[in-house]
Length: 110
Image (cartoon, rainbow, N blue to C red; front, side, top):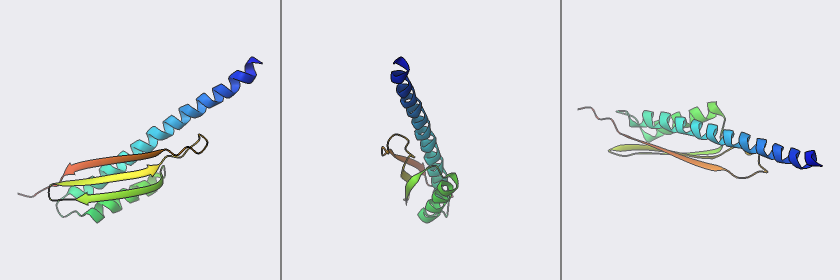
């Protein structure tokens, strides 16, 4: 009787631990992708399109994110990259959406 109660609880705990690891891994991949995109967009002569392309290329190669959406803005003073997407879910299809934003000053040649 005790095993019949404890085994499902242990399996649920294991799934929660693995899901948490997937969430942290996906967030790290998104942060790295956004950082790479903002680095490309902020350089002298860089554009928002260049930053978006660099971010999307990194996300395609990483493959850890579902339904990625990339938004890049390059203003006079700052470049901003926002990445939004869903984490692969093990927990009964629970929708886990993450948004990561990286911002950096635009380089200027003086």
